[in-house]
Image (cartoon, rainbow, N blue to C red; front, side, top):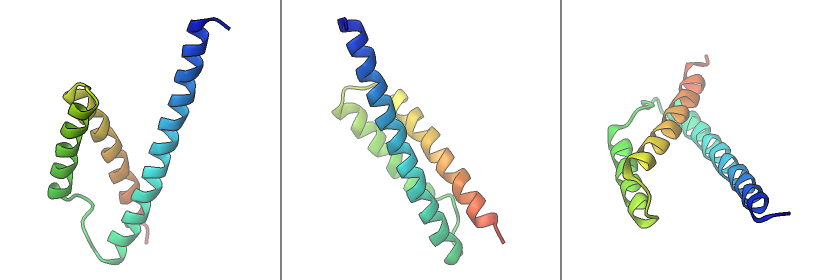
Amino acid sequence: MDKLQQLRQQIEQLDEKIILAVAQRLDCARKVGEYKKIHNLSIFNSEVEDNKMELADELAQKFSLDKNFVRSLLYFIINESCKEQAKIISRG
C-alpha cells in the first residue's frame, strides 16, 4: 500500500470516528429533549448557544483551525440537535 492509500485509509477511519461522535452527541441531545419536554422548557436557549460559539472560538484557536469553519460546523450540529429535540417535544 502506498503512502497516499495509507493516508486515505486514515481519513476514512477518522471520518467514521467523527460520525460516531456526532451520533453520540445527537443521542445526548435527544435525552436533553426528553428533559425539556418533561420540564416544559424551550428548545432554544440563546445563552447556551452563545456559550457554544465561544467554545467554538476557543477550540478553533486551540487546534489552529479557522474560526468560521468551526463555528459553522458546530452550528450545523446544534441545528440538527434542535430538530431532534423538536421531534421529541412535538410528540403527544
